[in-house]
Structures are given as C-alpha cells and as structure tokens.
Figure 1 (cartoon, rainbow, N blue to C red):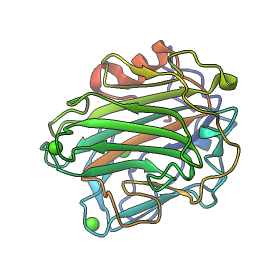
Figure 2: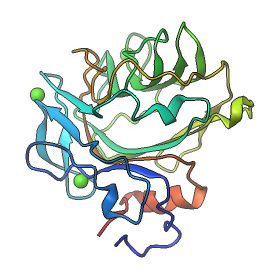
Figure 3: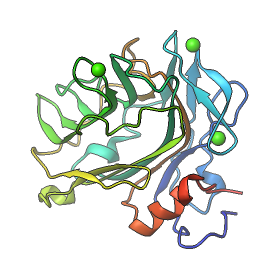
Figure 4: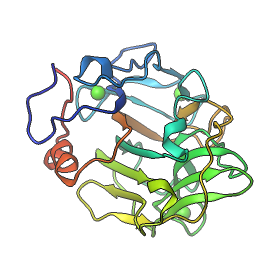
Amino acid sequence: MPASGVPFSNYSDLLAYYQFNEASGDSINVCSSTASTDCISSVDGVPSGVTYGATGIIGDAIQWDLTDDSGTFGTSVDQWNFMHNTSGLFTFNIWFRDNTGTDSGGLDAIFDNIQANSANKGVGIWRNDSGAKDGVLEIFIVAGSGTEVAKIITANDFMPADTDWHMMTIRYDYNGGTDTGANLKVRVDDGADTEVGLTGVASDLDPPLPAELGQLANLSAWGAGMAFDEATIFNRVWSEAEIEDVWNSGAGKLLVE
Ligand SMILES: [Ca+2]
Ligand SMILES: [Ca+2]
Ligand SMILES: [Ca+2]
C-alpha cells in the first residue's frame, strides 16, 4: 500500500519507480508495489560498474563514479516513447547528489536515449560544466533530423555546487503541439521553474536505443559523477501540491511502504 500522505495520493500513470536500495544487481522498478495500475512491467534498471549502498535521500542510493559506469533502464526502444511523442506528457523526478560539488569541467548525462544527438528521437537530460558553462542543466526533447521540439538550457549555477541531496522535477506537456510558453519546465528543490514553449513538431518514432541513467545511451561518454535516488517517471504532469509533498522540505517522500 502507498504511504497515506496527503496530498500525494494519485498514483495513476506512474510507469517507473526506482528506489536504488539494492546491494547489487538490477535496480528494480517497484511501481507495481504502489497503487499504480499503469506500470511498465519488466523495466528494471541494469547498472554496471556503479557503487551500490551509498547513503541516499531515502535508504541507499547508487553512485556513478566516471569509471566504467553505465546503467540501461529499459529493454526496448519504445518503452519511453510516451515522453517525446505527439502526445508527449511526463513528470521525471529524481534525487541527485554530486560526488565532489565542484565544476566537473565536462558533461554529466542524467537520462538519455538520444546519444545527445537531435538527429535521433527522444529525450536527453544532462548537466553541462564544460568551458564557461558551470552548473547548467540542459534538457532536449528531439524529433529527428535536428528538430528540437522543446529545449531548456538554464543559466549558470542552476545546478547546485555542493554534495547535498537535491530533487530535480521535470514536467513536460506537448499539449497537442500547441505552444503554451511553458510546455517544458524544470526546477531543483523548491526553486522556481525554468520553462520554455515548443520550438518544433514531435515525432511518434522510437528513440534509437533504450534509455540510460548516468551516461549517454550505449556510449561510454558523458558519465555522471553523481549518485541518484528515488527516481520516478509518470505519464502525467504533477501538480504544485504533489511536487511540494514529494519534496517534503528536503527530506523526500517514500511512495511505497
Ligand atoms: Ca565505476
Ligand atoms: Ca533509496
Ligand atoms: Ca565549467
């Protein structure tokens, strides 16, 4: 049974929920242990080279350390199609903690099924510290042939420069292709949203590859020097009250007993 908290009580359209409490092996998608009836079955994460048992925001976490780390989250290319397609609609919520709290000087892939290439279709989320960019978060919803459906490149220092746990909430609604000026939004912790409208037409075609956490899909590139915990992907947009509830003044909220 889910925790009895209010206002977070709507588990509909919860497709994936990773708690990262395992001491080894796969990261189990536990969304079927909530009241969700919309889980994607058999989409456990398969991390490799990561450190298990790091102290998480709730229980343990897994940590990527830039050396031989990967983590495929999905077994077929169509599983996350709902995130970028012509009815694209999602909330991606994840807790993260940087390993060092300093400018990495590079790129840290958080979620990717496009290999950071707008010639593909899908979603890419990464931190960019390269060059003069420091603590920039970049989110791309792309539709192939260079088409950027929605794109956020935040200001410097959007991503915190410390080793504390933080919550990232990304909300997207393609809205039938109608630009609302805020189709794609992201916030860290209880900060203000950075938001953008649409700049291109979505595609229903699949990404080239299953998604990865902590590295570009199927490439040993842009490894993340971060730990992750309590990752959820919903096929709907969270309300303000739901974000506030899961943020829980920085303590996080268990969505399953
Ligand atoms: Ca490693
Ligand atoms: Ca955990
Ligand atoms: Ca930099």
